[in-house]
Length: 347
Image (cartoon, rainbow, N blue to C red; front, side):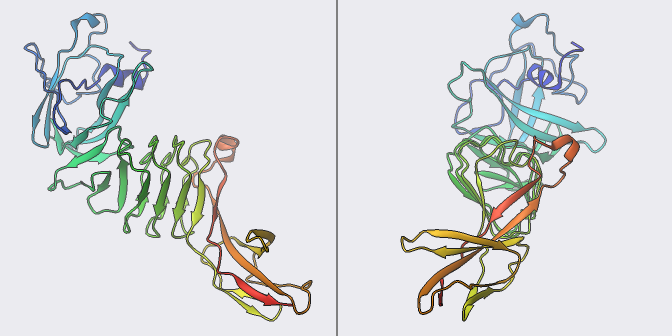
């Protein structure tokens, strides 16, 4: 028992939801006659209420669904097959709860239990107010009490009540592209993690911080498009490896003056790439510069040339520690801006 890790404790304390019906699920609907109400508020974390020596006792706990208030009476065996559980932590002093929706799936399972379900987010659990929610969620959609004081949702995503934090994305919403609403300031830790269908995420300029593991384990993600280069990205935001392109809608307004082109500085750009447009329509990279002008000295007299400029930002990874993170997480993130309009120059 002493050797069990935290995640084993979670497995011991599985919220094993059975016999659910309808599209909104927050409670077990199968009751047993020998339930044991817990008198102290350690519902998911207390090990003293579990008897791991007698798994044959089967399931002996249930939820009582009272609107958005969840009551929990429990005595559970260790269960190792496919299940769903609320993974909770409690602040006894403030009488508040933080929750995370955990999806435990065995290799034999074809799909997670709630991949096609809308799940109700409780206002309270056993009288304790739910004030925090973390991580992406292994179900189809959120059902949030309109009067909830801490959270709100558009169905696909859970936000803080003031809309400034994006807390959790419904992994099985089948959404392939998502635009973060203007006004969100932070994408919280693991908010989109493991959302396998998402291919593109658009991030408005109101977002200033990207939390830990926010976009990790997302094999289908091909592009994250920012509206601003002014962004703080945690070193682990994309996990250890990622293939997604980091792009930005910012672009330079380019003018020509004789045999040179010039442009206004793009806020927070690290440098600019100068391209020549070839006859086949492709763009050839000529050089990179931190300047805001470029003079061409090899143009043939009387011949017309077409150029374009792309701003690029190199963002230092937040919380990067070279001794601990080298060869594990990236030291910086390269974000490519949008190519400027073509500009013609005559030699």
